[in-house]
Length: 37
Image (cartoon, rainbow, N blue to C red):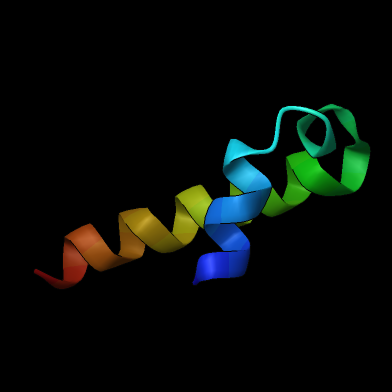
């Protein structure tokens, strides 16, 4: 989980294609967690 947060809050990595995909994946995981509750 710490790795996902680091990707989201790292503005430099945020500019890369892979990082954008990771952010989308992290958002999806967060949405799934919200649905679980």
